[in-house]
Image (tube, rainbow, N blue to C red; front, side, top):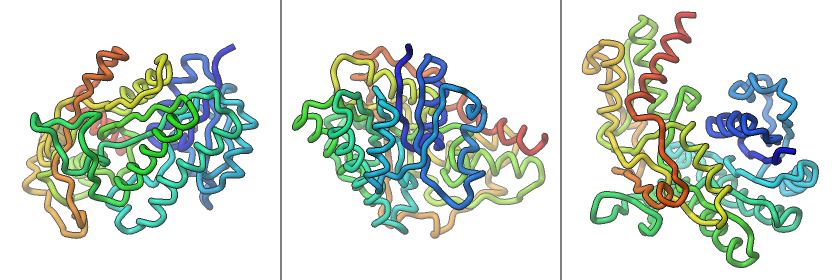
Length: 326
């Protein structure tokens, strides 16, 4: 018999790739969906898995602890991956209270449910490089012991979730690992995130479907990897014999401007003719640079990413070119 896993946020980018990964390893996968009024659209990232007998979907919400208890009792999950959150940094400034509740208190609700129902289960918490804010070590990297000083409501909520996970691990001897993941992308990324926004509009402009792309701060730099590589890292953390905290990153950063230039190079267009910036896409407090040192995870878990930034962006641009020419 294979293992059983529960994924919160299974219909997101990471949840969909993780579900595929675990099913291919013989897991039975339970997924939590947050009910919305357009139910037919909320599972599009996992619709290709819906007829897989290994997949079970349940409605629940991180802010409704009773629903979490019900799903934990029903699934009897051995591994729990908490990926659900209000995950858009810019939007967290518009919805700070909801972000704090869903991303921070929601994690606490799930931890308390696990403590009561299945304390023997292994728990993965999706932590974030946004927790570091603008703190960078002297060598230009952020790592597990870099001080955390977030510059957004999202980052603040993630710091709470990270710390309460460490507290529950130490207080109740639970197997809880934090994956401090740096930015990770794919064709399944929401189109309001900058990588897929740029890839999509570059394709649309190339095909004559659009004539402009408006962005925020193009000088910010990020360490971008592929979500497929990062969900494998999540799984590896829970296969380790010890619960711990790991930075997951490529160790290479690029500016948003480089992202724009590279995507427009793929479609053989000059970005200067189409791309501009607007204040409405700027953050009230900007996070300037992120670059992660994942040497602990690479040496401890033997993790290596398969994608480069360039191969990832080529996949994303070509996805949208194919999408609009079908």
